[in-house]
Length: 246
Ligand SMILES: Nc1nc2c(ncn2[C@@H]2O[C@H](COP(=O)(O)OP(=O)(O)OP(=O)(O)O)[C@@H](O)[C@H]2O)c(=O)[nH]1
Ligand SMILES: [Mg+2]
Image (cartoon, rainbow, N blue to C red; front, side):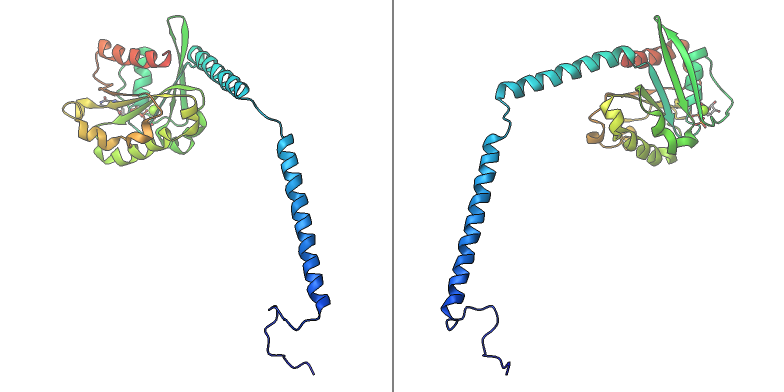
């Protein structure tokens, strides 16, 4: 009448007919056979796999290292792009004006978009790119091919330092800049308004942590683009160009 025999389903039942027991053993044997065959097939395939000898692996590593060194050489001779970035009114256009005309800029006309100038140096053409500070959302589109990135900072305005630190962190973490081994110059500008150079602790409060900068050569320059003499600015110019062709 469908009444329960008091045993829970799925549990071993000693009162089952012997044909049921035999079928269960048969199933186990079939499973073992399938398992064995699968294992044998996997082992067969593993022995048939293409093998790489130690010498081949070494050769491959050497080839990769050679190609990387060749690319580094190529990059040295060809990266002629200096990119100036920084918050609005930090002094990027002022730096471009000093690079190209050696003129101090006193008026402020915000750069809407970008400003590219060419400069001839020792028979080579150097491209100086400035991207407006208000365009920070789009900076990353101008990063490829940058040999030296000059990040201009208004050192007289400490209220900007947290924002500067954040932007620097993003740039140091940029995979493309890491791959291209872009060098950084952090130009602490407007020192005529700070009453002297910034001290180490203040500079450290602007910089992202060291682990974030470890993939790049970083130089810190303190100046006043408005008041630097020709010789003083030439020293900065040479620092940038030496990094470019290093
Ligand atoms: N006192 C002082 N003023 C400076 C110095 N360098 C630049 N300035 C002034 O700061 C203002 C902004 O300079 P710009 O070079 O136009 O700034 P920018 O970074 O190009 O600005 P955006 O194009 O808006 O991103 C101008 O009025 C400059 O004269 C400096 O060393 N000292
Ligand atoms: Mg500008």
